[in-house]
Image 1 (cartoon, rainbow, N blue to C red):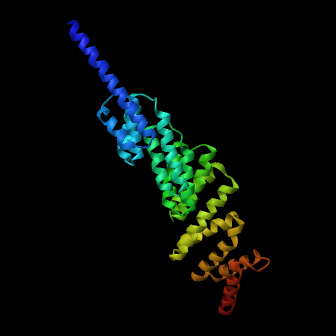
Image 2: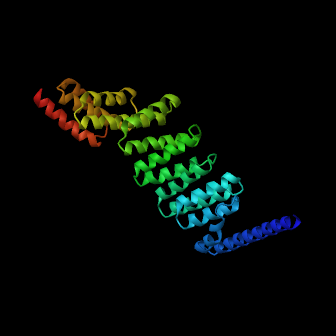
Image 3: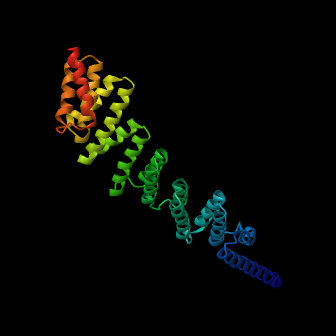
Length: 291
């Protein structure tokens, strides 16, 4: 019996020493960026209930761009304990920042999404917002929308969230998702009642007005342009809105209203240099000949 116990202890110690040697070798190969040899040392330990072994396996696969395998082993490590949680977050963060530096925001977004799946409490709204901003500047509106919406799932109430919502609305306009933009812009204006919110809401309504006008949906277009005129905001779009109302009135044979709208365009431009002033003058001349 004593011999059996001694044999078990010897085998256990031998196994531990063997494992420690393999982990030590793997660390050395990882430091030298030799991830294939590191995996050779670790692969026989893949079923070990050891957070470090699982983390090192995940790291090797990540560095080899085998992202599914990497995430699997990182999850195993975190399921055992949180010893390597910060290391996992940092390695993905570094990859995301590098992707942003070389103008690959979509790749960065994937790394941030991996962090979100692995470490649910990680606050990464600002990172996702940054990815959204980069995509917006590149006019990748759908990618920007995706990033902004994910950021808002994490944080929807802070000062950052208000900026994210503002940029999300701009991205929705860029993507021609105007009704979604209108819904969010209306919610934000009703909640905050700021001049900036009113300006953005009016910009959405103006875009919708132009869209309906282009498809000859005059009643709908008129509603949106009238809303801008009613609010008298933003000043920069007032002459545009009056001009388009004039176009609608003329097309629908409400000539007196058309004349009134075109004259408003002229009054709003005392220097008579605006882009719609010349057109309004031409329309008034045409209407005068008809009337």
